[in-house]
Length: 479
Image (cartoon, rainbow, N blue to C red; front, side, top):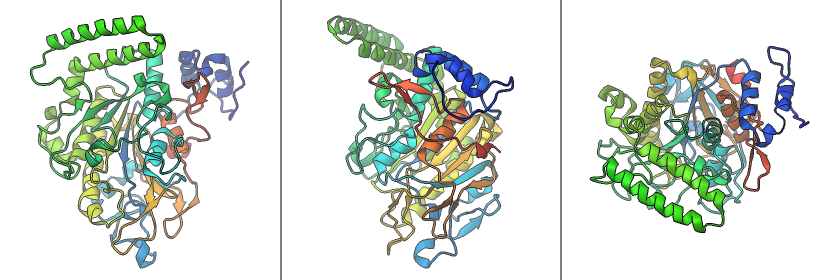
């Protein structure tokens, strides 16, 4: 019998979670995942579970000292230029440029003690989206590779495909408004983290794309027109004059080409995986449900104004529309289009004038909108960067990379709001207690979704590999 090591939490019928998983035998090794999922359904902890996740990736690293971990008593060169304001959470001071967020703090929990040692954007972004360290050393490059760990969204897509195949009308995993890095420096820096990596491209996200007007344009900071907010699926833009009949004809020609390719192929499995991904792509582009969800113009003007007409606000609104359409995991990237943005080395002017106000508007609108629609109790909303900023600022109030301490904000899916988790030191430099790793955050997100963080899937060498290694869910967030 396969031995499962872990705690001995019992289910309501007296059996332990370990015993139930052992009954699945080789299923945990990827041979019979539906049996494992059925066992997990029986063994699930008695906490609210998320139906969906909205993951807000604030790429570049927001400063803890200007957002959710202010230190008004710290020395002048540490505490920052912004004043603290009170929130609806006892003892939680928030930066003055987040007033709307402060007014809804009773809906979220601030984890103050996120920490890791990968002090690099690409590696950190991969780490936060996968829960596993990147295999490339710090400073070793930007580009995603087939050896990368699968993102959390890709694992959700994998689990759902094992249970339902491709029968779901919408993908389980989507990324908006663009793949990370697409708008940076004319798209020169595609970043790792959001992809399926060695799990296989059929588990990659369905990704939208929205272009900017010029090399110096930052649509995250300004109002965007409806003509810009296409949210077209990457690689599936139909083009002017493309009808469904023409698209089906084009598909037929592609199928003929693929048939010839398969006949001369010596590797059948990769082709089969690609065909499945292709099938999903065609189903999406011809789906009325997908077209309706992705048409932001169908949202009421009042709702669009509340989120903000900037790209981040409209992307958060799009995320809400997608989970309503039954997408299970939506990543919203707030990217560094200008090469800095949240990566605020130079000064805090952009943070003050653009970044915090746009986040404040969109984030508070998202939580209120989800609650009003009865969706917040079944949707976990996570907002974080891949690192924080150095406690000591430079002469221009810029701050360097600091992955040792930074915040993550969690709301919905039964997470107890109006509280904080973990305590930092007087300079917001180190955790005094309860440090939280990216592995812990990933385990927490899987836990909320009802997916065991002990689940193993087969890697590219067919080895059973845990989706999280060493992390534990923050179950205290639900107490």
